[in-house]
Image (cartoon, rainbow, N blue to C red; front, side):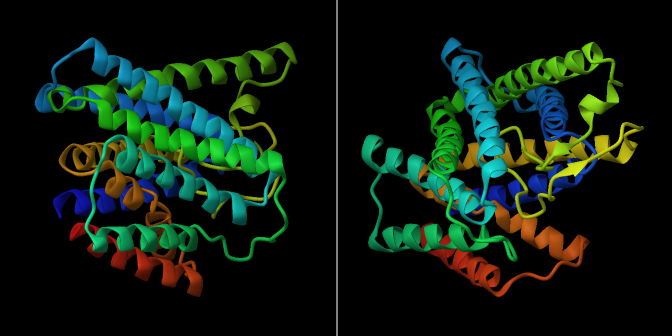
Length: 319
């Protein structure tokens, strides 16, 4: 039961991180917000490491690096597929694939066994993932093959993060997450550096490379995003970026690190198939925060998704 509770809690916290990242991306380019979030998470996990501990090994460091690449791949593919649209289809598709891939790995490769209620719980969980990921008001059009391919790739990358984390040893503590964040930070920092260099070469202000261009989509270092609050294409004139935007990105990274820690503990105590199904319900946190902070109305289909998510959580806890 505890692994299911931790995984569900991790999903809600992931959603909170997505929400903060989405707010940060109103004033920061999405990749910049992701970079700041990754760096903040790295500092927090590094500071926690002496207290939590963890044995160093080449294998666990390697898994941490690989998970970092999975996170960056998930982000890149997510931005690309959502830019093509439609978000109302590609976003739930990404979430479902991010659940199914590690579920199949756990059941087929790891040989995990579930009681009948567990199988029913997985089915209910997948339906809940689709419903909570629904974007009210979004235009429903037929997605392109390219968009579908990128959405599936993003989901596989997020699922790959969970699979890789499941390979880490119990003795490693938070070490794999520290390495993951270091990898995320390094890669995204290079990308931001290239954007700044391009702006300088074009004789444009550096701040113009940091402000949002096109669709503003906040993302976490592990590839999740606040898609529901993605704005229409925008153009921001060069100017000063509010300090609040930077603090929102930092908060996103800190909250995301907590979600990662909860998920890692759940993986080490329970089955990958169950943890992945519950983790994919991350839009729950975003929906609830938007309702409380922004006073947004929760759509009926999302209420149904929330109810099914709770039911799935209870069923998987008993599996």
